[in-house]
Image (cartoon, rainbow, N blue to C red):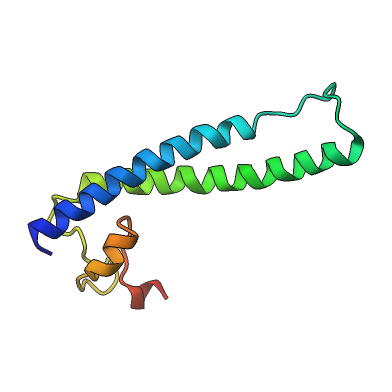
Length: 110
C-alpha cells in the first residue's frame, strides 16, 4: 500500500471517527431511561421502550466500530497495516477505503 493510499485511508478514518462520535452523542440522548411518570399511553410507552432497545443496539455497534477505527488509526503507520491477519495477503485498497478497520481480506472475512 502506498503512502498516498494510507493518507487517504487516514482521512477516511478521521472523518468516520468524527461522524461516529456525533452519532453516539445523539444515540446516548435517545437511550436515556424513560421515566415511569412520563405521560405516555401504555402502547406509546411500549413503542418508546422498543425504540430505545433498538437504539441501544445501534449505540453498542457504533461504540465498537469507533474503537476499531481508533485502533486502525494507531496501526496505520505500522508495516502490518492492510495485511490480512489470516492469510497474510494484502487487503485490497477498495475494501480498506470502505471499511478501514478491516483486519481480514474479503476471502478470509467470508
